[in-house]
Image (cartoon, rainbow, N blue to C red; front, side, top):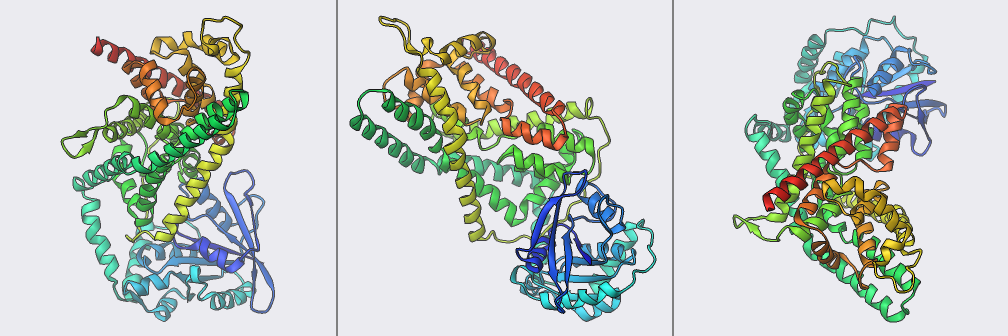
Amino acid sequence: MLAALVGNPNAGKTSLFNALTGSRQKVGNYPGVTVERKAGRLVLPDGAVAELVDLPGTYSLTPRSPDEAVTRDMVLGAQAGERRPDVIVAVIDATNLRNHLRFVLELRRLGLPMVVALNMVDLAERDGTEIDVAQLSRILGLAVIPTVAVRKRGLADLTAAIAPLFDKEPAALASPEADIRLLQREARAIADTVTLTQGAARRWSQRLDAVALHPVAGPILLAALLFLMFQAVFTFAETPMDWLTAGVTALQAEITTLLPDNWLRSLLNDGVLGGVGMVIVFLPQILILFFFILCLEQSGYMVRAAFLMDRLMARVGLNGRAFIPLISSFACAIPGIMATRTIDEPKDRLTTILIAPLMTCSARLPVYAIVIGAFIPDRAVGGVFNLQGLVLFGLYGFGVAGALLAAWALRRTVTKGSTPTFLMEMPQYQWPAGRDIGIGLYQRAWAFLARAGTIILLSTLALWALASWPKPPEGATRPALEYSIAGKIGAALEPVFRPIGFNKEIALALVPGMAAREVAVSALGTVYALQGDEGTVTRSLVDRLRGAWSLPTALAFLAWYVFAPQCISTLAVTRRETNGWAWPAFMFGYLFAMAYVAAGATFWIATWLGG
């Protein structure tokens, strides 16, 4: 016996699946595709056990992405290696009947035994929306069971309604083709009939959307929110960053006092604290960035931002559906690339994958912060704005502009294809839950610290070893670094990067930076610590960079990291999503070219203006 949960995205379908199956789940992939298959054991009232599958969310049986194609093929019995479900459990959102009922009407045409789970009835009741469930059931000719998946309400009634459907013979399969406009009109008529009272929250959402989605006020509001976010990254993080810096400095001073001047003291001070400690200092800035992103997501505004960006993105050959993966890439390109699975058109999806690394991920933030802190004055502009925050906002803006330019070029060359239409559901506005925000920040902080304790630590220690040996001969007049293995690597790379203003220390830091972008900061900290006195931490590295780099070099370094080739993990997930190494190699090549040209142009223009 096989039952399938089917419904629109954001209907609470996965929460219902978890509530019905508990820990009795198995996760895998559908044959031949990267779409996740989640199945579990559903225990019926008589003790019998059925298999329950949670199908990917979709708006209709006309697929717009690989995920939606799996749902369509499953309910039609056309999915390779899978049998057609005996029962469909259609999950709909009680707060959004007008849109969700259309898909129910489309599923009903298939003739399969079906029950409707009217989910999130608690939210509808809280908002003052009253639904006549009995009348809805009569109109649809289907059992309609009110549920609250997250609180496990209505589960017994739902399983009781599912059980007898396994003995019911399916009707003749109707054509899945249907006039969507007619079904939508019918769905809205049904929703208006069974909705006895309209909630105040829906009315407030409509009023807020009149501003947030306005063709003029909407983009201004979006730009203001993003600008506030980047100002806050520098303004609010300064004090906790000073605390962390003081802690690292104290640890280095303690190690200097306790240990003699030997390789172990150099390892701990120059390698671990001078490298990893340099990166951990930027944790407050990363958490502030994620705080804003999580609030925008949970409030329901992020979907509106995607809608606002649809017109702009259409001009470069994309649509608003690509906006969510690209926004996710501000946190990390890896989940952003994986989120492109929701994009239906293959060329559109490939273009989004190829430009996702141009979104300024959180790993770039330590790089930007250290260079901005060293070369951009910490002063107010216009008495209100922080100049360092303005520069950071500009760097993020250049990344977005570069992504749009790259998308425009790609869509007219290697990924040429039609631009699909954009369909996305607008959720209600809601206050972000403090608990959820706290859990999200904890998870991001833990992931960052785990990364610092593994990839960054190992890369920094490897660089410290390469930069420490072999030791210079007696009476050597040149810096010790030049005699080391790392020094020789940097000297070999320097001619490649000298035209764009980079010295051998920068060239050397770019190599471990391929493991993770923020490793470049720890690499610079380690290299400059080994060339100077003990105790190199964030502020001393700022001073060292001021003495070692010119302003054109610093600006060129920032320009390089706006477009820099992504980390190894991003290349690996791109290979998985594109089923080969050809596109990851292309991605690395074009990003390297963009970074090299941008850094070179910045260096020569800044040098000319300064001269």
